[in-house]
Amino acid sequence: MTQIDIIKECQICSEVSQANGEALIGSAGNYNHFLFVEMAEPWARNFVYEHPQLGAIYAMAEDLEQEQVNIRVMAIAPDYHHSNSNLTRVLHYQRPTGQFARFEKQEFLIPHEKIMSLAIALLKQLSELSQFDAYRQQTNHIRDMMLCTHGSYDLACGRFGYPLYRQLRSEYAANAESRFRVWRCSHLGPHNFAPLLVDFPEGRYWGHLKPEILPLLVQRNGSVAKLYPFYVGWAGISWAEQIAEREIWMQEGWDWVNDRKSGQTLAIDPSDEDYPDWAEVRIDFTSVNGHSGAYEARIEAKGTVKTMWTSGKDQPLWEVKQYHVSRLDKVVKSQILS
Image (cartoon, rainbow, N blue to C red; front, side, top):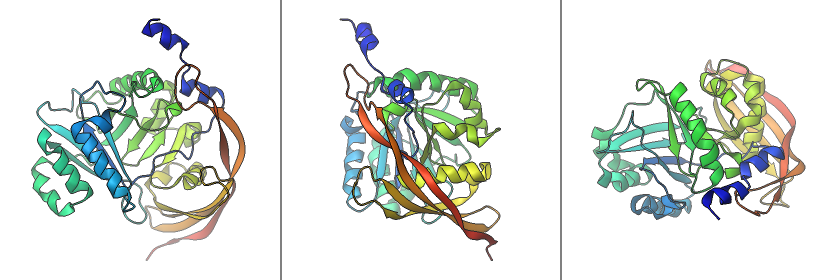
């Protein structure tokens, strides 16, 4: 059997997910740090874990998890407009303390042999970071979309991710002077949500994307409600809070993305650690004009769907709970902070 025949017989997890109506919301990766390191393709399935430098950074990140510091280490492919073959680009996004609207960004172009020492400085030893000032890039004005095209990890990511990357690249990021860039990245999240991307510096995840929705996603010149089924969630808060945050965004409109926010889970069903039946959450916010407020919401399970988590032949279907917001209250009146 040829590889083409194998692909023809393969079931694509993303297609199964979409056909069965699986909701995406609540699945965005929730991390303190995102670290993207430029590495040439091809990438093997376990490239990030097995590469000498990325693997060492990944091991360090796992050690830091014991200190309640969650770190996502990923690869991005070089881009002919932005990349330098003699240097390695490192993009670092960090969750600010307290309420925030965007992750704090740092970008560097460094010699290849300095990747590990920079990662240590960014993640563990901030006092050492000044030695990399000469390599720092002034790109805080640039919006970066990381789109998973890691086809060796799952067929869905390559089949659906790469064509969408080409469209974003040619139609929105072709100009080297653009304030918008799109990168091919390694394994990002659930394969069954492919094509899947994360939009930085906000840290918003989007999945099951269609070419026709890209103008709204990039340019934000229409109703935010049309993005509802594609929204996976905001990386700044936990899964249940993400479900509530989407409903708030639909009410507040585009201004919501600029409001500083924080979330907390007030109570959660103790009977099922992985898929609880309910959760009570609160989202506090401060708008750009100084108004503060909060929403409280109840998230409840509402039915199940069957999904496939990995593409392949004869892969099992898994039944997963679906969630909705059963109650959403604005509990604090807006007021202008003094």
